[in-house]
Image 1: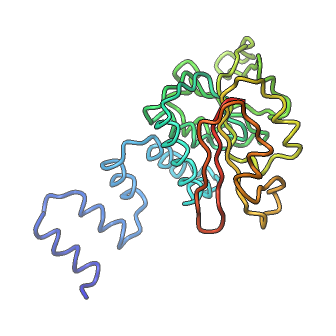
Image 2: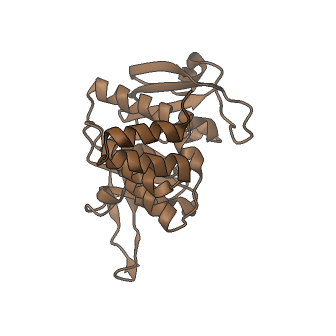
Image 3: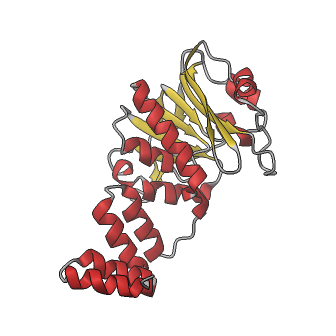
Length: 257
């Protein structure tokens, strides 16, 4: 079998001016991370490439699990399903939004959405979420990450403000009524019934959970899709299904509360 460098030699001989082969050589043989960004940038038109390059070049630490196969497959499943349902999300409240990668995927899809607010109790995720979603963050806050416990949100009519470093003051309160509530980590939510009860009837809800009981932080797992349905009653169900992943099964339900 040909060694990798021999294969690259032959491709480079056939295509001497092909920059992709030169970058591939650097990536494979020299482990040059900057070659990776150039290669991905040529073949993938996603904000993730520039965001990852920025995070690496500025030595900004973040949890790489946000790009694990299970995380990405689960979010892609959600985006593909919502696109197929052809529903208008309007203003989205993303609960437990973490780094806002789902928001990026929604914005880059053909899904109709007005704005996404990503709520997380961890203040350290705000900067990274806004790096991943920078084009929409700087577009009149079409995306905004907010540090707040999702149990304290008013899902009927909510108000929030943000600190503006440019003006050195808090912004005027922004009051809005979310059209859609998304929670892809229902397995993490303590007092889940109390949280779900705060969502008014008629709101579009998109919910995911799993049966991965081995993780200590998973305090609200479901054994099956039917068990998940029992704790997430809806007046109208648009979709429910299962996604089999390597270590667990993920459940998803979409419908009107």
